[in-house]
Length: 444
Ligand SMILES: [Zn+2]
Image (cartoon, rainbow, N blue to C red; front, side, top):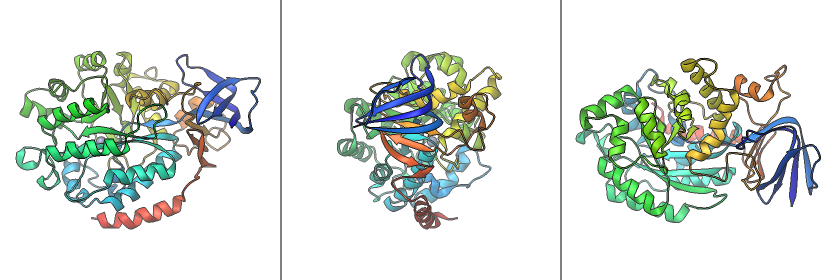
C-alpha cells in the first residue's frame, strides 16, 4: 500500500536543507519512500494537501506531563521557591491522575505538530505504581511516539537536598524499577514507538552516587541518559557551596558528559563549558518559555549550535510552561535567540531545525526528524489558508513568525492521527473533562 501526499510545500530539513515548493511525499509501510517535486509517482491513494506546508513532525525533548494537573501555581516564584511549593501537591500523584495528565499533554503536543514526546517523570510517592506505564498507555492510545524516562530523587531535605524526605527513594529501588521498565517497555531499532530513558532529576535532588549508578545502568542497558542542569543562578550557587564547582563541572566529575546524554535547560554555561559539551557530544534540551516563565534566563543557543552541540526544543512541564505547544517553542526559540544576539542570530528555518532534526539528534534517533527516504513518515501538515498566513511572502517563515498554530494533519509512521485539527483516535472534549475531574484532587 503506497500513499502520496501531494500539492504541498515540503520542508524536508535534510542535510542540504531541501525544500520542494510544489512537492509530494510518497509513503509506504510507515516510512517515507520518496520525496520530490514535479512529476508524481504512482500510488495506491493520492491526497491533495492544497498548498499546505509539510514539515517533519516536531520532537519534544523535555516535559513533565503530570504537571498539567498543577498549572498556574507559585506564579512569582524562582525555580526553588516554585518547587518547594509544588512538591507536597505532587505527592498526590497516582496512575489515574498521571494517565489523565498524559493524555492532556500529549494531545496538546500532537495538535501543535509533535510526533515524538519525551517525558521526564521523577515523582514516585511510596506505594504508587504504574505511573510510567500510564504515560505509555496514553501515548499508544493517541498514536504518538514516546520516550518515557524513569526519573528519580534520593536527596531529601534532611540530607541537604530540596525535595521533602517523603518524596525521595532508595537507590536500589530506583535502579531495579528502571531496569524492570526497560525490560518491559523499551523498543530499540528503527521506528521504535516506545523507549525508556534514565533520568535522575537534578544536582539538588539526587546524590552523586545515584547519578553515577544511573549512568552505569543506562550504559549497560543501552538507554539514553537525561537530567536537569544549569537552569538557574540559585542552582549554580547551590553546587558551588556543596561541591565547590559549577553544575556542569559537577556532572563532568561524575562521568556523565557523553554522547548518550542530554541535559535540560543549560541556561548558565561558560564558554569553556559550551566547549566541553561539544567535545563530549552532550546534548541540550532548550526550553525557552519555561526559562522565561521562571525568570531563569536565556540559554546561549546560538553559541551551542555554532560549537556543534546537539540542541533540541522542549516545552518543559506544564506547571512552568502552562502550554504544551511545541510549535510555539519554535517561535520562542527564535525570539529569545534574537533577543540575545540580534536579528541575525536565528532564522525561521534554523528554529524549525531545532524542533525537528535537533530534537531527534538529542534523543539519539536517526529514524525521525527529517523527511527523507527510509525515515519514519512522521509529518506535520500546516494549512496556509487560515487567518495567520495571508499575505506571508514566505509561508515557512510566516509559520514561525506568526506563532501558535494548530496542525491541520499529523501523521505518525504514516498513520493519520490528527485530521482537520482534531485528534483521530480520541475526543478532545472528553480528555479535557477527564483531566478536570483529576485536577480537582490537586486544587490548592
Ligand atoms: Zn524540567
